[in-house]
Image 1 (cartoon, rainbow, N blue to C red):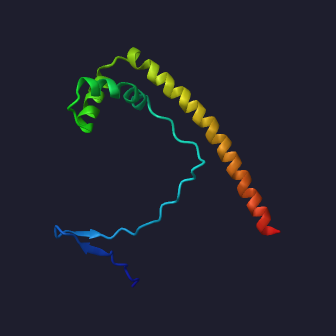
Image 2: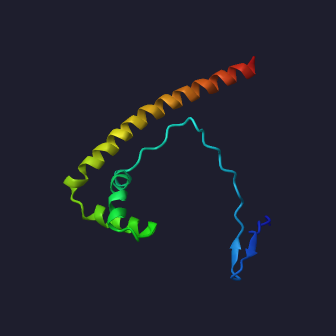
Image 3: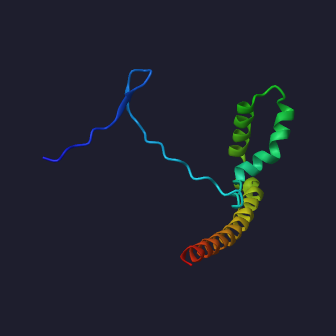
Length: 118
């Protein structure tokens, strides 16, 4: 009869048994890699945050986020269109930068492989 592996468990402060997650090391990001474009909502927030903060000086960070979210949801598609257009433009620029970065990275990896085989 085959042996069955037991799951590791640990008791937490609340007394519940939980599976122990094996930690995986996260790969470091390349600082030269292009950054993802901001969403239309984030572009909107960037433009409106100071105005909303001036209207509500005692608001906390979370309250400002809530107010901005309500304002964004109240916008019509026509009002959102400029932010969506900016996002699409940034997304296209990111795609070209990412393709160029990936091609350069692949070329560098090929060069390293050739150097190791020599």
